[in-house]
Length: 259
Image (tube, rainbow, N blue to C red; front, side, top):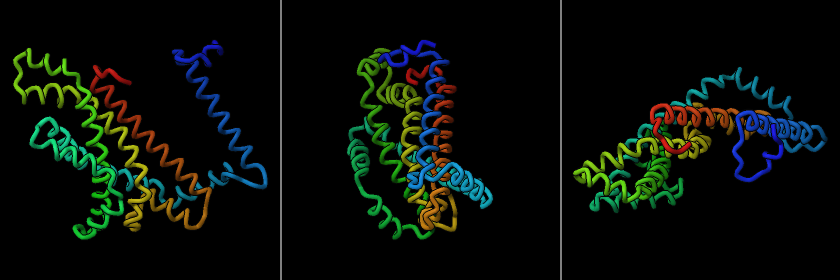
C-alpha cells in the first residue's frame, strides 16, 4: 500500500487501499466512542449500554417492528412510484405541464398542513400513515424525475427524430425506456428521506408498532442506550435498502453509465 496516495486529491485507489481506509476510520470512531464514554461526563451511551439496549429490544420483538416499518414503507413506495411516474412523464405534454410543476412546488408545504386535510378524508390510522408517506415522497420524487427529464440532451431527441420516431415514440424510447435506470437511482435517493420520516409517521398509530414507535417510547423514558441502538438499526436497515436498490439497478441495467 502506498500511503502517499491516500492524501492526493482525485487519486483512484485500489480495493485494498479503500478497505484499509475504511477500516482505519472504523477504528478511529470506535476509539473515540470508548474514550468519550469512559469519563464521568458521557456525551454518548457506552458500548455496554448500547449492547444491553439491543438485547432488550430483541427480546421485545425488534424483528417484528422492523417488518412493520418495512411493510409500511413498501406500501407507500409502490403507490408513490406509480403516481409520481405518471405526473413526471406528463411533463413533456404542454397541457399537463402545469400539473407537474405545481406538484413539484408543493414540496414546500409543511407536513402539518398535509395531515390536517388527510384527517378529514381518511378515518383509518394505518391508511393515514401510508398516505402521509406517499404525499411526502411523491413531491420529491416528481421533482427529481423532472430534473432527469430536463437534463436529457437535445441530441438524443434529434437522433430519435432522425430515426422517424413519432413524438409519442420519442416519449417512450428516450424518456421512459431510456431513463429507466435513473428512476431506480432517484427512488434510492428519495427513499432515504422517507425512511427518516418513519419516526414521525409511525407515531400516528402507536398500536401498529414499528421502529418509530420504539424510538419514541425510548426517548420518553430517556433510555439513551436503547435510542442509540435503534438509531444504529434504522441506519443499517436504510443502508441495506440502499445497497439492494443499487444492486438491482446494476444487475438489470448493465448499460447504466453512473455508479
